[in-house]
Image 1 (cartoon, one colour):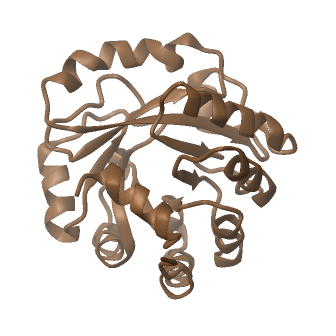
Image 2 (cartoon, rainbow, N blue to C red):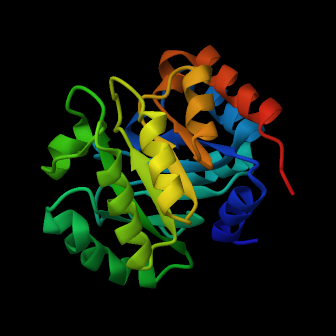
Length: 249
């Protein structure tokens, strides 16, 4: 089954899911094996990338992640050069919340010849930054202004524009190191106005906050830094999803 079909099935059955985001610059240390074992048990797939990724992704890195977890490795590129043929898929992101042409289409055009030479499953994704507190790395790197968290209607119309443009997924992101997660009110309005699978990430550190986001309409929750800073909280979130979000046929 393709990853797109798997994500669509999660949405159709309302079964919900967890995604682990791993930064290639932070794949060393005592907690790496713990994160990979966590992904093996709980994650639908692993996102590999980040706003400040400097290193090119190594083949050995992807092989180690896949060998230990048995889960698809999906590229979450910060730059057009972060394309690797050994991954399973790539989020082909277009930053619709900003007006920087480099992140709307420029880097995508640059990356396309590299992607074309691979067997990567390409997942066209509306990427929408939502400002929930202090500025994040993603805002600084992309030089864009996020959608205000107190303006859910802007997030909804932006997501709908992405759907009309033919995207396959919607990814709302508070950004790495976000002070707060995206409010459920924003997620709910996006869900009510769009039909694509909905991924939410950034600032999710507590199971009750994650549960509120899922109840508002998210299909997948993304956690990353949390598994370095507070693995127990990440396990709490994973168990909440596993125990309380059963398929609804």
